[in-house]
Length: 194
Image 1 (cartoon, rainbow, N blue to C red):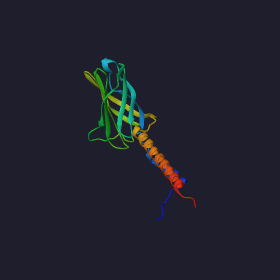
Image 2 (image 1 turned 45 degrees about the vertical axis):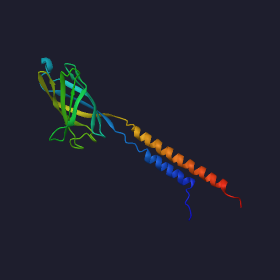
Image 3 (image 1 turned 135 degrees about the vertical axis):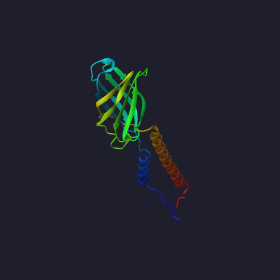
Image 4 (image 1 turned 60 degrees about the horizontal axis):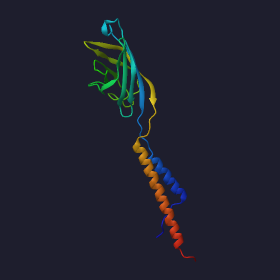
């Protein structure tokens, strides 16, 4: 029975394929969106309205999660940066979030349509209207003319498991190549001269 031996070229091809398959990265895409608009009527504290708001949402559009939020309402100079809820809005294709401030004196409840994947942030690309309200005791201030627009992307990095898998694949292939070489050298030494 004849044994099949791989050539050096085929080993290189196997090595390249193993490293490429082991190194397939699954990195999430993080997008930054600007949020802005105004409220209807007067501002908190009885100031003449409308009040303007602006801020930023950071979304992982691969897994469909909100990773950060920061919204400011002017006047009165209120800053909201603690994300307390992010979920699909019941019986709609909208997504809703609640962001409050540190002593939880106020919060903003906002929602926006998700047209690419209804009621999900997967693949969300922005350029949508924002609705909702600011709740500042004892009143609510309705959002009108709110928009969410794309601002930028944070470059994804491969997950640690991807690096471990790549390193393990490379180590295995190198070890197998080394064993095959040392086995071939021993066989050459053991052959009698003819």
